[in-house]
Length: 409
Image (cartoon, rainbow, N blue to C red):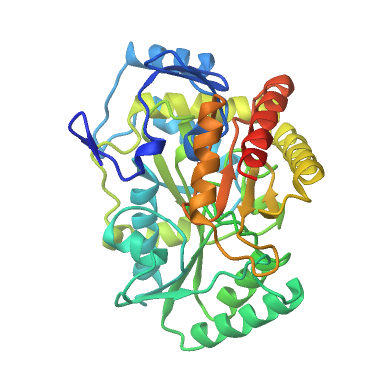
């Protein structure tokens, strides 16, 4: 779709012009006030236009707005120290990026340079960026040389037990890794956030990948673009299973949407051995303004322990939705981790068949009720409210959502 000279890769019904945004609300240009249940797809985790983050940006603009890649502004040094200090001890070297795509490209280059291998393993119907390489990790389509896509071991659209799902996945992954030509396995922290399915993996998924990648000399790259910064009930998704990857990438909520920034973080020994080959150069990676926003964002998460509220509110959302929608003939499943929650809409609960038309209607019905939600255009509504949302606003939004689902019969 092209509107006002801008190319949109979305459906017309999702498109609206924003006038302003604050906290958990969006306002359209024609005056409609929406409760937001998207956080800009896991970007404004602290709520839209957080005043403290805005103040940090304004303060930095008055000092300095740019630093070339052969230098480091004080804001960059301060943020690098705070970010690596919040991660497991081995992850201490940062690649400066402008967003998730660039951070994941850096991760691919680093893994290939260190291992001397080229193959990257990912999962079908996952999203890690818009470049040719990052799309090849999970975008469904013709096979791409040096990229292998496995089926994600989700626990919903299967008749097997979680234990059996995990074991079958382990067997498939080990067969691929045993060739010893795989540079890295790319995954999120036990849930798919980027593609929109909100599929959840069985318990033990991340530890299993960590074990097998270590066994076969393969890197584990953890994409925390969607799961990081308190979204899943811990500051970072890796904390849920106590797993430390070889490389982790961040973007989206890293600056709460105030400025474009991403990060690839790895071990010192990996960075030292690969920096001459991986060429981690980005003209606008980590501008001082973006670092000031990211610094204040992380400070707020740590100060307020935002992840604790996200965990409580996520459990509350799932509990209420299950209580009020469990008997609905079109609701097949309600699942999630923290405040990353999916509602699966099906034609029949027994077959679990996708219902694209109905899920689109629910998005439209919600918009009419002044609630902003998004879906995967197949069957799943993905709920990602701001983690700072007040309980009264959350309840009002849930009420509108439930009404919207019941309205389609």
